[in-house]
Image 1 (cartoon, rainbow, N blue to C red):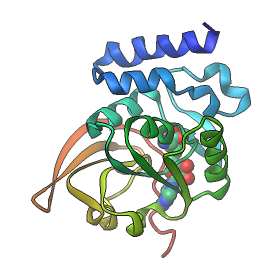
Image 2 (image 1 turned 135 degrees about the vertical axis):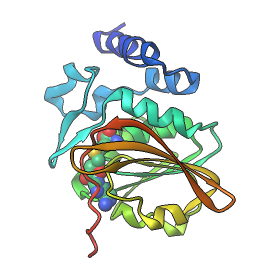
Image 3 (image 1 turned 180 degrees about the vertical axis):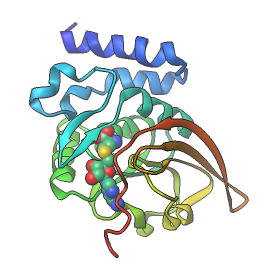
Image 4 (image 1 turned 120 degrees about the vertical axis):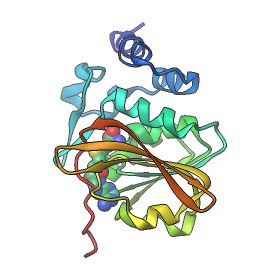
Length: 212
Ligand code: SAH
């Protein structure tokens, strides 16, 4: 086993399983996806550290534990059509590609989107699509979605995303200000969003006035 592969196994045990992540599909996916491929060359040896890492454009690849919490809450079985907002490095996109049937991921920075697309293609993910654009508008052409994962912090839940969440669908989104956010799990039940407030987190901001 290579050092990075050993580090990936150790990450899954000590950062995920030991902290209460139990969904076997999430744990398996995180054992399979090589996070080192999604970080800049100079950070590869830190790929399994317990935190975010810089990926350029002032953005970060999310902490593995927070990613696992979000993925577990979405309860994906493998049949779902999923929307991700904030592709960033593409790491979560790859995990969603492992866990769902079809993934659409929107990133506002074209260079990050392009880089993520190259890594995902190189790793053989054929069920994921990366789109450059404003994720707060969602992707009406491909809606509704069984699950939506937002990787950047919003002051409020964008209306378009609620409108594009299927009946019975789940959304995970960090909501709050620059330095105080909480993950929200939103389930669409009988056409109404049902919100549960989860862990405190810290994400880069979701840019909500891109088209203003
Ligand atoms: N899950 C990603 C997280 C990247 S950080 C990873 O682990 O790599 C969040 C990303 O959201 C950034 O790349 C940022 O550019 C993007 N973002 C912020 N506002 C956005 C918007 N309105 N539409 C699409 N992407 C957005």
